[in-house]
Amino acid sequence: MKLHYRISLWNYFHYAQHGRYALWRSLEEVVNEIYLSGYGVELWPSWGEYPIVERAWGRKKYDLFDEIYRERLRNLLKDKPSSWHSGNIYTFEENRRQIDTASYVGSDVIVVHLRHILTESLDNFALARKVIAYANLKNVKIALENGGPENDASPLPILKNVLDQLDDLKACIDTGHIYHTRGNKPQSMKAYVDVMKDKLCHLHLHDYIEDKERDHFMPGRGLIRKKDWLYLLRALSELDFEGAAVLEIRPSPPLRIAMETEKFFNYLLQKI
Image 1 (cartoon, helix red, strand yellow):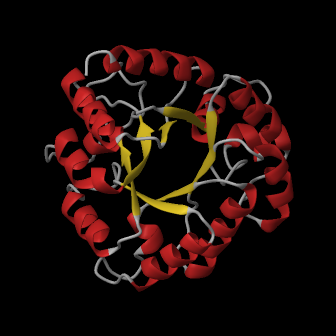
Image 2: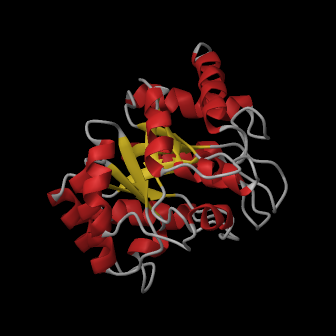
């Protein structure tokens, strides 16, 4: 088992939002910095929608899933580990555009939420089956992520049903989302790992604190217990997990976050 760390562009967005960069750098500069430091990258498609980026670039938004960026992205990402977080999409055509981009540039996974593939009701799987079948043709995995603070109640029964119904749908465990919900129902790392591990191909790693306005802390700096991290790592070891471990963490220099997180998990791996 090996954790293959990737840094989400989400980290850079929030780092920039908090005034850490006087001017924003180009996509190429950011991604090459990540790769030269030994990490993979997870792309956030709405690059440019954040206020500091608007000021620096003089544009409101652009969508990296747009066909006009594919050649640029292919040259940038060629032969390097990359994945994507889905945009806010709800139709097959929108999903197909994302899959086509990921396939063309050589990315392996698109992480989605329930609303991206189940748009009519939670028991209507027609869209999801069509999306997953098309992704399979393009050699791209669709990984369903457990929900975040927008879920007042635990989505675990829903996630289990969806994963059971859709054979080729993969899973992405988001560690902070397990705990950071607006509701008061207790969440459990063990429960989520046990339900999702057989489909697991991807991780989103961050910690949490009991503050509804703040989330996505560096692992080991929040309230997730050591024994819960160890339970996850033991499950990954049993699975001989070889997927990506993506860091989605708010402000601190993104590369420093990556290095300190790697040290934290290397320490824990010695305990399993």
